[in-house]
Image 1 (cartoon, one colour):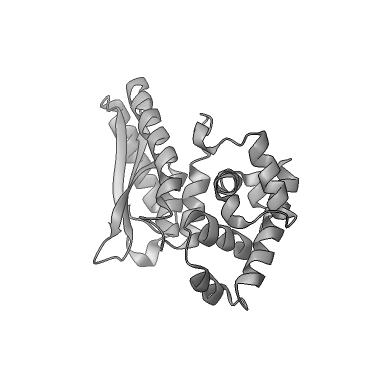
Image 2: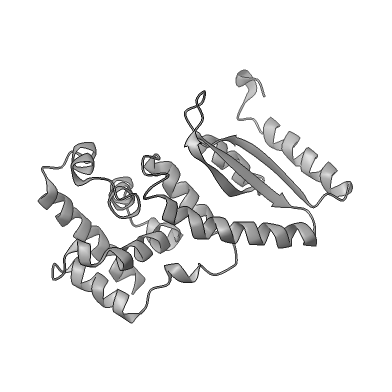
Length: 219
C-alpha cells in the first residue's frame, strides 16, 4: 500500500481477501514473513495471524528480526498451528536472555502479550508453585537476594507481562526494567545507564517495588 494511503484499512481488506480466497481453495494455513516491528505486529494481529517463529539474527537491510505469522483456515491447519504456537510460546521467553538480549523492550512485551492469546494454558515451565510465591514475597520485602530468586521471578514476569489485568497496572518504565533485568538478563551497568539510575542499589530498590506490585495483584 502506497505510503500516502496507508492506515485507511486498504492493506487489511486486501489481506482478508487473500485469506478468504485461500479458504475457498481449501488451504489449511495462510501466513507471512516480515521484519518484526510494533507497527507490523499490530497489523498482522488485527487479521488474526499469530507469530510462530522469530529469526535468530537481525536482517542486514531492515535491522529487525524476521518473523513468521500464520492463521488457520481448516481443522487440520488449526491442529498444526496449535502445535507450532505452543512451541513458540515455550521457547521465546527463554531465548530472551541470549538470542534476543538486545531486542527492543516494547517489541519483547508485544510478543509476550501475543503468547497469551491462545486458549491453551501456559507451558508448565511458567507455572508458580508455593515455594516460588514464598521466594517472590521474600524478595519483594527485601529478605532475599535477587540471585537466589531468579527462577521464580522469571516465571512471575513471563506470566505477568502476558496478562492484561496485571500489565495495565505497570508503567512502560516498569515493564522495561522487568524485561531488561529478569528476562533479558542484561548487565547491571547497561540497565543503570539506559534507565538513568544512580547505581545497582537504586535498580534493586525499583525492582523490588515492581515485583511487590505484581505479587499483590497476582495473589
